[in-house]
Image (cartoon, rainbow, N blue to C red; front, side, top):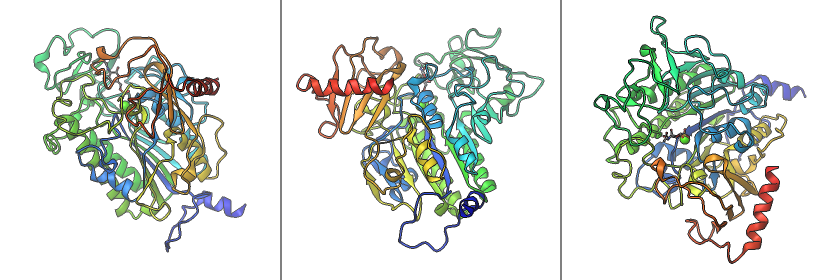
Length: 504
Ligand code: NG6
Ligand code: CA
C-alpha cells in the first residue's frame, strides 16, 4: 500500500535500462497522444503505401509498434474525438456529430473522461490544438470567460481552436478565454446570418487567396473564406500559416514546464484538414500541393516534439501515441489541387473509402506507439486496436478503476506483449451509420439515403448507401471488392445481429 502511494506521488524513474522489458502495469509514464486531422492510412510512409515521406511520424513506428489494424471509432472528427476522451461509442450520443464552432460542450462535465481518470492517478493534463467537442452552453459570449470548456472535462490546461480551421471563430481559446482579443473590437459569431458590412467569400472572391469549391464561402479571414460568420476580434484571428508553430511551441513549453510530474498531453494537430495553408517553410516543398505540404509540416512538428523529449531526457518515461481522427479526403471544400497533384501517392493506402465512409479507409488510420525501454521497437502488430480503448488501457496501466463503457483494456496488445487486441469493433460513418468488424470480417448493413457526391466526395471514396448488405473478408480482400453476402448470408446476418445486440 505504501509503495502504491509513493508511485502516485513521485515520478517513476527508469534508470539503468536493461534489454529486459519492464512491467507496464502500475507505472506512470508521461502520455502524449498526437492526433492528426484527416490523415490517411497510406499517408504515413512507415505503412509503406504512399510516396510521400514522413520520417518523423515513421520514427514512432520504427522505434515502437506499427499497428496495421488501428481504428478511430468514426469517419469524422467530433464523434471520433468524443470516443477518445470519453471511452464511449459516438452513436450513443445523438449530438456527437460534426459540430459547428458555436456548438455547446458535447461532453457532460459529470461523466468520466480519460483526462479525469489520469488526473486521479496524479497526472497533469493538457489539450493543445484542435478541440471540436463544443464550448459553452449554446450562447457563448466570446468576449468573456467561456464556462464549459476543456478544463471542465478533465484538462488542467487547454489551448485550442474551438472547432476546425474551416469554421468560425478563427481564434484560439486558452483556458476558456479567447487569446489576444482587443476589448475595443469585440468578437461576434453566428452560423445563421452574416453581420452587416462583413465581406464573404461568395460576394468577394477577389479577396481570396484560396478559392472554395463547395460550402466554405462565408466569413473571410487571412484570405480564406470559412463556414460561418464572424465579426470583430480582428487582433485575435489566426493566421493559418502560423498555426502549426503556435500549437507546437505551446506543446514543447508544456512538456518542459511539467516534466517533473507525470503529464498527459493531447496534442491535436490541425493538419491536413482544410483549408491547407502551411507555413512558407513548407509551401511548395512536396510537389503535391497544399495537402502534401501540410503533411510535411505536420511531420516536422512531430519531429520537433520528439526532439524536445530527447533533449529533456524524457523518452524513456514517455509513451507517444500517434494516430488520426479519421481517414483522408482530397477536395473537402477548397480548390487546392489535392487530387490533381497527388501523383502516385495513395492517402488511402490500398483501402477502400475515405473520410465520412464506412469502408475501411474511413476509420482505419495510422496508429503508432513508442515507449523507449518498455515497448520493444521495430514491430508490426495486426491486433485490432482502437482509440476508444486508450481510456481503459491507460487506466489499467496507472492502476485506476476500469471505466464501465465501450473502452476495453487492451494494454497487452498496445505494448506489444500480446498479438490479440479487441475481438470486434463497431465503426461509424457519416450520420451515425454503423458497421461491424469482427476478426477478419466486416459487415455493412443495407442503408438508404443520398450519395455523398454533393459534398465533393467522389463515388469511389465516399460511402454510398446500398440497398444490399455488404460482407467482406479483410484478410483476403483488403480492398473490399468482393461482397460475400450472397454466398454466406447466415454468417453476415449473425454478425449484424451481434452488432445490434452490442448497440443496445
Ligand atoms: C463538413 C465540411 C468539411 C469539413 C467537415 C468536418 C462542408 C460541405 N463540408 O461539413 O469541409 O469541415 O465538415 O471535418 O461544409 S472534420 O474532420 O472536422 O470532421
Ligand atoms: Ca478530421
